[in-house]
Length: 415
Image (cartoon, rainbow, N blue to C red):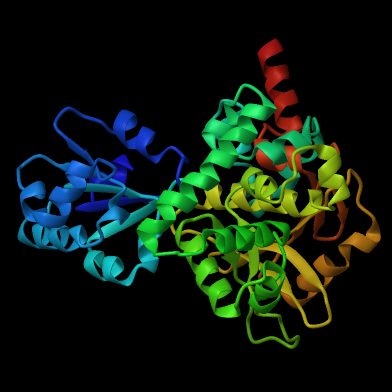
């Protein structure tokens, strides 16, 4: 963010509500010379709507929080930037995807850089600034070869997710109360700033159906039927959930190759804990009974991949691959003409039968994909066969030093 503010006149920080955007801009980037306004303040919101140019007038740089509450203010920012373009003049934050709001994206075209703040990664939950070992896995998975500690309390990690208040909640009951309040606040307040929804009960049913289908292909007709709402309403509600950063539609990797590829996106929530709460899953036993552990584990991996991607320029694409014959790879990372296929397994061991889709992908994209990865909940990172590695999820998410490197460092220290 500091680098972007030193270069661009407008920096936009977005992400789901309660990921820590306001904390970041007020405490990490809060120099005395910067004016701060929150559009949650009704007086400020009224000024933004009635006298936007006066609100922005002055020599000091301006920070505007919850900018989605007054999209017309962006026109005043456009005028101000065109009149005097200097780096860091405006820092905007919001819990809506401004790029999906046509008036906003057109107003800021060529003037703004966008950054997205995701929920905590597992490394951040454990006190570090890590976003996983994805770069190492992309370049050379042998760097992680060896034994690793498996993730302790995996079910609790999935049920907690990465929203800071949920992570820091003192008890399971307090965590669930926070999730209940989060959804209620979103429905009763945040959603209404994006669109006028008359039937909030219908919308909440659609949210629950989406949570139960986490990781599945998007089929709006089936979702509408399960939620008991018209298909156009399901389409509209999904768009609003995506604009709020609560759900993501993961696109398919598709090039003109010999096999026909399924092009429908897969649906994921921004946070495994929120998805579990909406699905009314509160314990590990319920996770197993409802057969959601695998889906929420994939959701966790996607959240980590997206947080890692946000640090990089150019940003890699995160996709999935599925053929009409049913072969599927959970995630495909595409960057600089290179592909990394990733399969996610919720068990501690890998069978040869688990590798069929990875083999097909690697055969189809031999030049672009030097190797593939199977993530599992066990301990050992090792090469399973030519171009396929198995890696513990704990190693991928925590980004620890590779065991061989750690031992070498210990030897050097002892010497």
